[in-house]
Length: 181
Image (cartoon, rainbow, N blue to C red; front, side, top):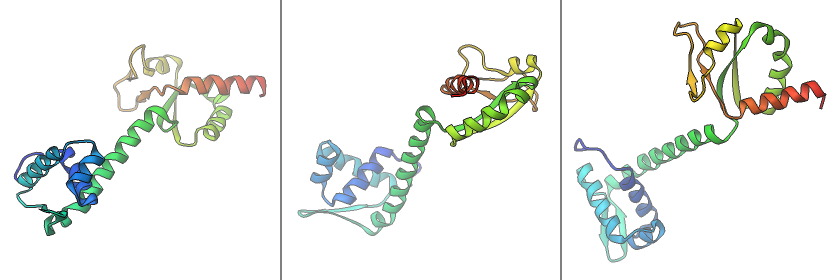
């Protein structure tokens, strides 16, 4: 590379062009003008300092450097897609790691049954348990409007987090435990 930043859009366009073998088909698939693809490829080639595609009447073919680059582009874009799906899953699915901070008395009375039921209901959520005095637990809990907060900055203090469905699940499981249903 010549020292600049390669645009992800250009890499995406390059991959689709390589798959289609034709700028017109790639433009149609991407929903952009053919000139947009031509400019993007020219900029990508300038950034890479090499010719990636050979253009002729029948379409485009990858040069040796284009063939060499394509697997890296494909892998990089797949990793970015996987990362985006993972992050979106954290917001919409029951997945993640959380610290559950509870007073010692509640921890010994309520949590054994709750944790077993919760693990069965949400196996992709990893819960870590932190117990302390009632005051320490309140101080470590997130405050209103703060999705993450710690009350104590010492290294042994818990990092408390809020998962939006966690309180609903706790209420649901607590009601099932008390009603026996």
